[in-house]
Length: 529
Image (cartoon, rainbow, N blue to C red; front, side, top):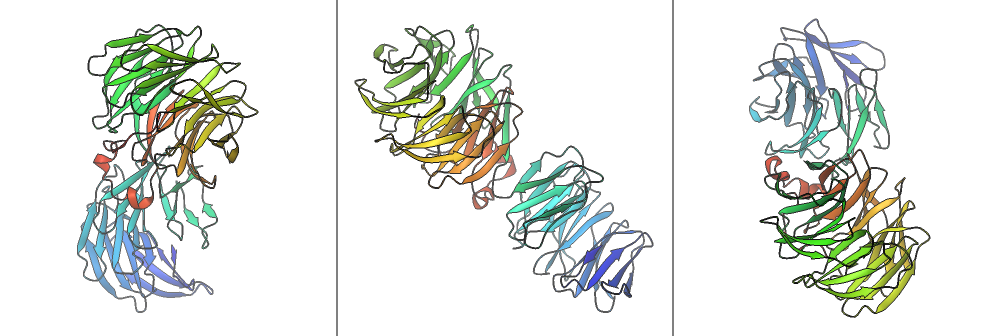
């Protein structure tokens, strides 16, 4: 059943092989369309109300004159029943979904097939166009909804998360949101409300068309993934885990390419060196190690801390490394030789995060009492102290070095002035404490990871929450941006690493399905660490 755009007429399809048009006010039958040779399953009006399209179990769709009931065109091409139909906003095209798992786009005037969209693995129960006609959305028995480029037929993205078939899909009037459900779903005309029939499937999901999609999961760890980092060229991800291993993953092949194991203690922190050939680990056995990626050989062991190492950082110029420890100190090391150069002893409690500024000249650290400090990296001189009321789990500089973001044992992340230590901004939205927070490479966004099992993307200037990334089943311990800022990597207590889109819908539309995970973190210069 479908209404005309002015709400005055209704069209219905029936098992009697016919479609009928009714007066929406009086219920009077205005027209009957006969021509299908089996039940009529789907119907829709054109935007101007002058035509109707119907889909039937006879494997055809038919276009009718809504004024006189004449059949204008038969659309032949599907190999099984046509279950869903829709006109484009300009009325020039028709899209159909079928039991043959395909979506087809047709010229509404001459009946020519413009595109056949392949990708679903089951019947396509619902189809529609975006308000601007640039996208097509489809929902299927394969439990996915998919977005396609209407001009090229290219699949842009797939939304996964339902536990049963998707019987209906709808786009908000502004094209920003998609709602999917097992039963009928619709947005209100102003886009502020969703109506869903949940009789068959108790879930309806709303998706952001502009981002927040999970594109890659790396599995293999048997313990919580405590730390992740992205190489400078974006090709590799390194992960450290409480299972006592560190693993290096090739994003293009989606495979583990190196594993460091047998360390005898949980690994709490990892970081790449800028050359992309080495990485460093920090462990609960009180040591840090520098590793060769190609061979898996330990190049240097950094010893000196008297308690567990919680964090490691590498200076962007590749000359120094810093470690933060529960022995209340920060130690600085020569990255080439592994030799200890300085110890910063200003904290009066366990040190959790450490990070370098992009100029490699300053280090920020924070402790369990909520005290943060900025140090001169070359001398250990204490430059600035700032204080929170909660334990500071994480701290990171912005690319320009003017701001610091911290994640707390409370429900907020805080942005500080790096020169004065004054609080500038508070990010509120998580429902559990925040384990990780970093700036995007351009400094315009912040990503946070939380014990509420989500990561969130924020506007770094206003504190506005932009996106929430849901998919992990345990705490999100670590977060990182790809070098170009278009992808986010998260590590979780559920033993997985996930890669997510962080870009706008315009950028998303340029990525092809087969290349999406492969290019997930591949671009140019690295995040400051």
